[in-house]
Length: 209
Image (tube, rainbow, N blue to C red; front, side, top):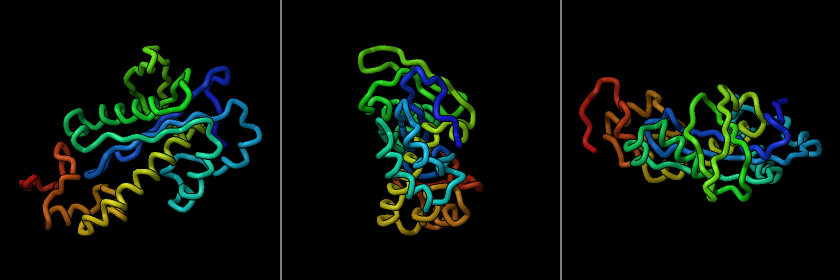
């Protein structure tokens, strides 16, 4: 079982993103605040882990559980245009900030998956402390919950895009740089959903955007 808290005396929000390494689609982020007293809910969260370590079936099973058990949660994104303008790291931070701002309750501490983050000021202008935790989605429950929400909501988004752009099989690769995805880019060119600031083809072939 993952750790339920970093500091039990504070109202913590775990934050994580999904889609940073993709060639196409937005980057999604989620923020999750769990109840301060989790004893009665822990049995429902036993399967929660880093979303990358879970099957899609388990992630789908856990999403409504997390949304029911959480004190508050929010999912937001940064667009492809914002990724190209800001770079993927800063766009990830932007998506996280948007998710945090959307929370019903204001957290007192942010638990961030990774080793970097930009300071977040609340709606009232208050600076909220944050703690960066490398591989935090495999260590803390709230971050792992956020990773599952970010991943499943982004997958849903890419599944919808697949209906309009079936040549790229985004329903399978979700925008990641698989061989099939790169071959489709080579054959059909890039779409408005591809990240222009990324190297879409290893051959550095010129693409028309």
